[in-house]
Structure formats: C-alpha cells, structure tokens
Image 1: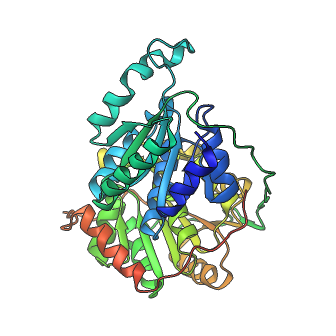
Image 2: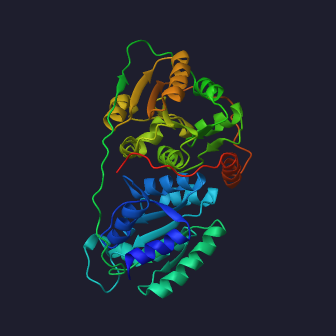
Image 3: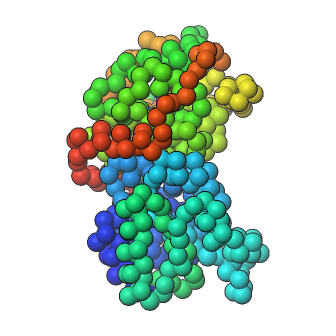
Length: 386
C-alpha cells in the first residue's frame, strides 16, 4: 500500500511520536516517520518501548516499530511497564520467518511464535492488511483499543508498504562540555539520604522517576508526590522513559534516578540520551556496587567508569559527585543551565529498615502523573537531533 497515505492516516488519528529499531520489512514506514514525524532511534527494542511510554505520559500518542526478533528484547518493558501502568502504545512488528516463506535460519522459530508471544503478553494484535481501505478500518479498531488504555500491535508481512525514500537526515552531534572525575574522598551516604536531598531540591515543575527496587520504595517513603513515578519493573528502562518524557514535556524538569545494576542492564540507552540531548533532564546514578534488593550480590560497576562513558555518549555535563552538598549544588546548577547532565554518586549498601512498598497501583501513579503534567499543557517542541 502507499506508505505516505497510510502514514497520514496515522497522523489524522494523532500518532505523531515514533521510536524503534529498523527492519527491512518496516523500512518504508520508518522512513515516513523520520521524514514527517518525531522519531527517536532507539538502541534496542526494549528502550523503544520505554521511550514511547515516556512520551505517552507526556501527552503524545506513541508508536513503536521493530522486527519480530527484537520483540523478545521488548518483553520485559511490555510485561512490567506497559502492562502494570496501562500504557496504550501502538506497535508495528515485522513477520520475519513467516512459515512457508524462505528466510534466514535465526528467524524460523520467532516467525512461528510472534502472534502467540503477543497473546501471552496480553497485547491485542492483527495482521496488517496490504489493502489501504482495509488497513484504514484496522487503524480505527486499533485506535479504539488504545482509547481503552490497551496496547495494540500490527504484525506486518513482507511487501506491505510501498517505497518511501528517506530524506536527507540532519545529524546533530552533541559532545561533552564539562567532565569532572573523582578528586577527593567519597562521603558514601545511604541511598535514603541522597534521595532526601534530591527530593528537597525539586520545585513545582519537577518530575522524579525512580528506578525499580528499593530506590522507588525509599522515594515513596520520603514523599509520595503526584509528580513521582516509581518503576516497579522494566529494569534498566528508567533513562529511556525519562528521555521520552523530557522530549514531550520540554518545560518540565525531568529527574531520572538510576541504579548501577539497572544502568548496566541497558547501557546503550546512554548513547540515545546523549544524541537527543534534552537539556531538561538530569540522570543521577546512585552506585552501591550491588543488587541490594535481591540480597546484596555484587554488580560489576566497580570496574566501570560511568562518568567517562556518559561524557563519551554526548551528555553535556558528566560529574562525579562526592558528597550530599555537591549533589544539591549540581542539581541547582542544572536547573539554571538546562543542559543534559549525568551525576554519579557512590553510596553505601545501607538501606532503610522495614521498607514499605508503594500503597498505590502503578496505573494510579500513571494517571496521577498525567494530571500533574496536564496542569501545564504545552505542545511538543522541535529539538536538535537526528
């Protein structure tokens, strides 16, 4: 079918924010999204789900695009982010390895189980028709599901979309402007103490996103605010979620609070964040060298120079923070400069005793945060980037 006409049908329904990873079956739809819409190129499919989810909370109707082999990479955020938070994404996944059609051996099994996998994850789906009129009807059906806070995926077979030439892309290079490595003794505060400082600096335009595990639970105990989001799963996705939210809500201050085990799981997200470079986002890594929530097993973060990596990925500022006073000062400076900032802080393995779990459901956290954001509705602004 005519890709441009189909893309315009998506735009008429309000779908203007796209994120994904390329696939030859979807290349023409991806080209349309790059040419005509807001498209964020993710490092992997799971990150694309998180980016699109963040943009959705920021008020954008979001679309994800991926090959079915990458659907397996997206299982964690689909089941532990999209499902519990009731985030209604529209998805297009290619059908490589379709039974009866010759393809590469690595696609054989996935081609047989793509539809089953979506069903197991409680995702509504249809095979996308190659007939434009029928596809229009399918889009309306998908839109109805999304209006009910349900994700909907189309499985796309080979040859569905006509050629859509990729226009010349303007690639913006973002480089580090300030880097500060460790140069004195670390205070090693407890995570609870660091979170208390972070929370105390926030203002009425600040959104705080806390990674899964004890980070979110401790922030909840410090203050359960309508501007907070506690990631209960989708480990490693908080930075990508923050990117989508920051791009869709450029007038808000987005504070991403990460852990070493979490960031190690999806370090490719740093490259995407650095490339799209939202100045209204600060990424804080609290590193205790441990998977503390699961028994204190060691991570490999002691062998990683996160400050240099973030700088090399294009974060405007990348700073090793030695104590709570520096943490506060860096956060205040970020609010003034509006530059994408990475703050790294070593913390102790100490956590709050008898730590409670949030008494509010993830979907309620989502709706509460949406209401907070809607108090200051703004339009998506163009940002420098590919």
